[in-house]
Amino acid sequence: MKFFVLAISVLLGATSAAQAQSGNDWPAFGNDSGGSQYSPLSQITKDNVTDLEVAWIHRSGDFKKNPSGTSLQAVPIQANDLLYYCTPFNRVFALDPATGEEVWVFDPYAPDADTGEPLLEGKVFPSTCRGVAYWAAAEPEEGAVCQKRIFKGDFQGNLWAIDADTGIACKDFGADAGHPGRVSNADYEMHGEGFVAMPSPGAIVGDVVVGATASNDGVQNANDGFVRGWDVRTGELKWEFNPIPQDRRDQSGAANVWSTMSADQERNLVFLPTTSPSTDYYGGGRRFPIPYSDAIVAVEAETGGVAWHFQTVRHDLFDYDLVGHPLLVTIEKDGEPREVAVLQTKMGWLFVFDRDTGEPIWPIEEMPAHETNIPEDEASPTQPVPTLPVAFASQSIDRDNLFGITPFDKAWCQAEFDKMRYEGLYTPPDFREALLFPSALGGGNWGGAAFDPDSNTLIIKAENLASRLRFEAKGDMADEDVARVDYLTRPLKDTPYAVIGEIFMSPLGIPCTPTPWGTLAAIDMSSGQMKWQIPLGQVKRFGITVPAAFGWGSPNIGGPIITGSGLIFIAATMDDKIRAIDIESGDELWQAGLPHQGSAIPVTYMANGRQYVVIAAGGTSRVTDNLGDAIVAFALPDD
Image (cartoon, rainbow, N blue to C red):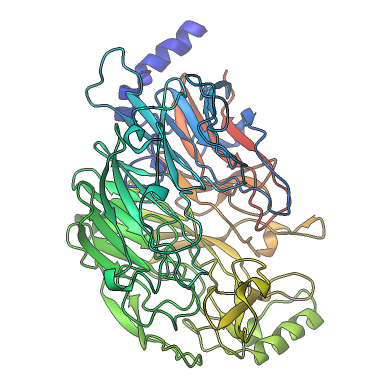
């Protein structure tokens, strides 16, 4: 039996090089560097997917319950015959991909093998780590260490280089800066204040590792949203890109990349999805053009120079920052292959661009937007809107269709709706209180899209929730005296106002937004039209899981992948399940319970002749109290 398995493994490509050629591994966040979230693997089919069973579960122990709980949004990668993932406590694990057994653990707070001293001092705070990046030398030095490297960012703005075979820090990386094993954004001018974190994996192009930063966009002059490129071996800074205009860097910041990036190896380009400038809801302190904010920006991987860009939201007053990497894929359009960048947005639009020129594949028109009532500010009179593809999320609310479990519940939602300012999409926050729909949660949000080259289909999930927001003058109150509850209720430091907000919910704690609250859609990329759209997931309330037949769907965090057998795998929902969906019909073919919410993106790979589907299931503290640390692997029975 062992010989048979070994023979199959060799045929399928036992070495990492063969795996990379055959598609048996998952070596980057979205599998390929363009982030398609597609795998050609087809051992698991529509006929046998119901036979999937838990193959193994790994637990790191790295989680914390609310308040200030952890979020496990890690997307593992499989390369070098190992499975790598990061934890909310700044550790990296390497596992046997077939058994889940630990091979090594990297912990910068543990004693270093060379010095006996930790590489980092201080308290470990729970933080988000969405993944790591993998690099291998094209011409490795025989017998040398760190010829294969794992790169991992952390909540202090450090980027670590770790030997992929042993888990030991690569001491040549950052040595010239005085901290071997890492480079640090703290070594460079950030032109602002607040935290600097690196929650998402870097992008690798040749021998350059590109790292992006997250900023506090609730501070008027937040740290600028720098993206930097370093030499993968030495950590020498090769370039930096700053989205904030040079003469305005003391007035505003952010416009950063907190989410994932994608890379075009042939064109030597890295694609950035940037965010709103600071502050995110109040624009009175930044009434000047910031064209690289809320924009897709294609930068040259060797120099950081901008090849092209497109701004999706002008003078953002809605926190409609870009939430994920552009998918770099080849679609069929008008009978011809087109190499494109597909960008999802919180508004529910898909922007599709020619990868060379940045020209839109479908025309983009101007939509009239709404004025702000904030005296120091001025809204953009129009916003860009693609004519196709069709919107994948709900974009308007009708008073008569507001949701309620009971007539009283619905009447309460309608009465509150009548109090608010709502003029449709792009209604800005207001003194009166405004209804924003989609909310800052999307529409589209993190992890949301995958592309199937076999059927020329884009699969994308959406969240349909509204938020209510208003400004309140701080008067003589200091910023620190204004309550900060979450990303919707904050003092907006160094501005005249605090923003007060919440999800539009009934007294029963149920969204007033019409159902479904979460969807999964298939879009034909030749026509831009919808093939199908289904409610995604089931909600839990009062200890009861609402039946799927109700069609309510679920708010969601995470995203889909697609396999060569025409299966979509997605978790993301609040019912703590993972599902397999038929890409042709949208029919659910299989589901399995998870120990915690799978607020991440699955991956799939081959190990020892067996296809695995793996998901990080630890939940995220913003939406659930059921937090944990599980990495769960599914596979067909091994007989």
